Length: 528
Ligand code: XMP
Image (spheres, rainbow, N blue to C red):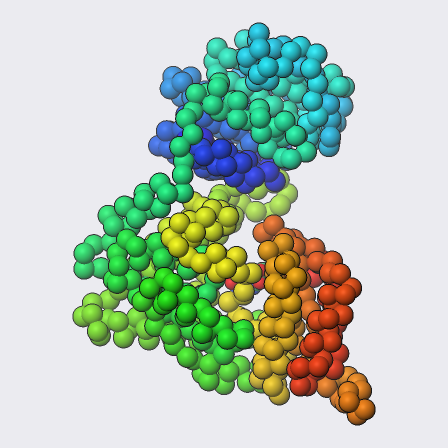
């Protein structure tokens, strides 16, 4: 295990993922975790991440007392990156100065010690140069006893240090970002040649291990429930649990009347035909839509949808209890690793550590008296790893690549009352034309999310020699890494022209098509 102690760098998730791509298991925990949390994980390598703090600030986060003694006694290798390097220097008897030469962005560094071809920069000789990505203000000016400078920046600042005898290493730059083109080579060499780690972390093993854990956790008489949203995470989580405990897993899929064109058929087809999952499909569209009638406030709409979902879920659990003679004990959730990582918040962010631990409920919360224990089999995985796990579990690739779809469904794509006129019907048709065109153009996979929005205004048009007074729709497509920030997607004009014509020619009630050209921020991805 490579353990990353996080000090708040924006690249901490990235380095965790990069290491996993080397088939090495890596985990990230808060940089201020207790010594026991660290020793319990028994890591062979520890990375101290970068972070926005200065080691001189009074609230500078640090590793716990006894850390250095623990790693030395147990032969653990330590690599400090940026702030992590400065922490090593400061804590082990060196000196870090508030930087006069601040270095941000692309820099050239030069190897100044090569350990006869070994060391951090294997195969590189003294005088060899490479481009790296720096981002620091403070700088190490005096190293602790036994440490040597291995590389310097063009400005003369310390860029890499090593104390091979004590297994401590440090990089002032970020090897994990693509702007450090030789960074991955360095990490590969560090883990495999210096630390002697053997690659062997495979998704097949993760799957077997998770199945073993679930089997051990769920007793022979226990029953498990899962709400399937039609999204990748809950589907993969349910498929994995089903593989472990078979039909003691009971899934529910709710048609809330806010789904996309033929969504229920498509999703149920995948669950039943491809995955053989036992799913109860509840058509609650009438119930949802009657509760939503006349409601225009976006937050109210969301709350109503959440509440209705809970009542249906409650009824499902109750029915199961009647049928099985006992209450279901566990609930499966598709929580992912980014949702559970506890990171060191940047100073001044107003966040405390506990605030940053999120528990994600796609279903909008659950009844408090249910007292269900959680099974979260994906909680150590990133989204792309969940997709890989899904592939191994034979979830169809087309399903795994589906764009995210929000829990409140089309309700957040119809500003105002979702039951107005035939807004839902119009929106479904427009959305289907748009998405199909995107698929036909071969650009579905490069877009994070694309959808149509029903605009609750009527504008004048002329169709078939007649004036019309019909609705306008908007098209939205964004690229993103994680949905937190997003850029609007640049379509070719011809594509937009074709889609616009097709929509106005085939969807009754639409005479105008607009394109949403805002990024996030300032907009959000959804319209509500
Ligand atoms: P926004 O609109 O906040 O959306 O920029 C970011 C991402 O989250 C999705 N989203 C939701 N997903 N329940 C969900 O499961 C919700 O209530 C919800 N609201 C937004 C959105 O589709 C986008 O991918």
